[in-house]
Image (tube, rainbow, N blue to C red; front, top):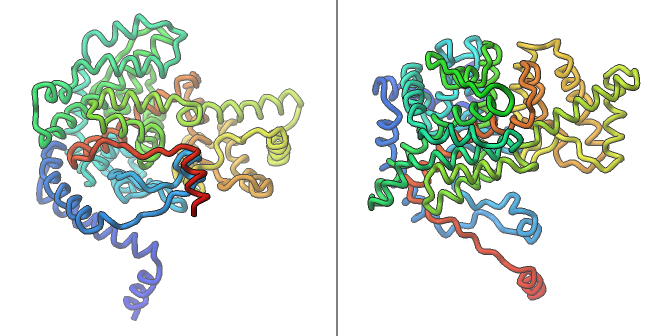
Amino acid sequence: MMGIAVCRNIFLSPINFTTMLSKISFASRTLARNARGVATIQEVLKSQVPQKQADLLALKKEHGDKVLGEVTVDQCIGGARGVKCMLWETSNLDAEEGIRFRGHTIPDCQQILPTFKGPAGPENGEPLLESLFWLLLTSEVPTKAEVDGLTADLHKRAASLPSHVVPLLNSLPKDMHPMTQFTIGLNAAQTGSAFAKAYQDGAPKTEYHEYVLEDVLNVVAQLPEIAATIYRNVYFDGVVSKDTSLDYSGNFCRMLGYDDKGFDELMRLYLCIHTDHEGGNASAHATHLVGSTLSDPYLAYAGGLNALAGPLHGLANQEVLGWIQGIQKQMADEGKEVNAETITQFTWDTLNAKKVIPGYGHAVLRKTDPRYSCQREFALKHMPDDELFKIVSTIYEVMPGILTEHGKTKNPYPNVDSHSGVLLWHYGFTQFQYYTVLFGVSRAVGALSQLYWDRALGLPLERPKSVTPEFIKKFCESQ
């Protein structure tokens, strides 16, 4: 009887049923993976591509004329918000649930993906970025041995950074914005593109994805040295040291000049949760759009980085940090304690001045961003007494109620940017102008994983239809 009751409860709850199916699917994939033994990421993808191609053709043939939604004039004028017009393999963003990477939530990933210390699970630390990279590319959860193989491969590929890139970065003005330098460095590394050479040599379309994969792996491998060179040049002595006995994130921390296991763990978490946020965000979409012209992954992701550099996209966390520090300074200047009451007054003063509260609200989400939640859990575990974290925590307690009362915010809950700057600041990473470069290192993993599948599935040049204001007016008047 107990079994019947449990089954009834599972099937009555859509969330439980979805979770159950996900676990069954994960278990079956795990069995298949264990039977396969240790494989390289190239071997896994080679086995998947033919079936994926066939599945997409079947989907198009059977359902190609079905309508996914309608486009309103507001959506046309308002940045195509909510228009379903992109195919995206690697992640999906739900308004209530948040991000799922290949069907797995962030807590799922923390439970199932290998960590630096070994098996999956929060007791062993945060997931390795390489493990999430494998998941996004293949849709499969890798073993620790497979992740170690990918780590070694990325370290090896990092050494192939063209010799002219670092001298070029060294020659750039120190006051040039780090994101501008980052884009320059990646564009300069494009001389090593395997896809660009293969295309020039006449490679057939059926092989494009093989060369794109080489570029994707190389770009992800080479970005840390480009990023670290910029950081060390602008803020320190220009010296970049490596430790390839560590994982991708740990080695990146050493290249930046940080030797702190706590910061290593933060960087693993930070890089993982910023990798992908479905395809409609500006940096992912820009990468997809530029890549659809058959620009190689270097050029395509340089487009994504330029989108990420915009104040409405990748610069948000430094704005949040500045706002929080503004609260702290004003309260200190006025001799007041930072608490729920004073933060409430500061918030209303901000809103009454027609200013936006940074870090709250999201274009899609209607609940607290799971990426915020996992960063909060990290802070509670590693830095519960940090003064800025205490302010962030108090803001979290009062802000949703204030914004709900204010009535002009669709989502009164915090997003990922509400927390990340405070965590970085705690570990002494105070150069907030550089924060977006960290975001850029991470987002490459998601955007370029999708770019691989764009070429493997033969997706076409992206070319939506635009309309003039006169067309819209005449069309609407004729209805």
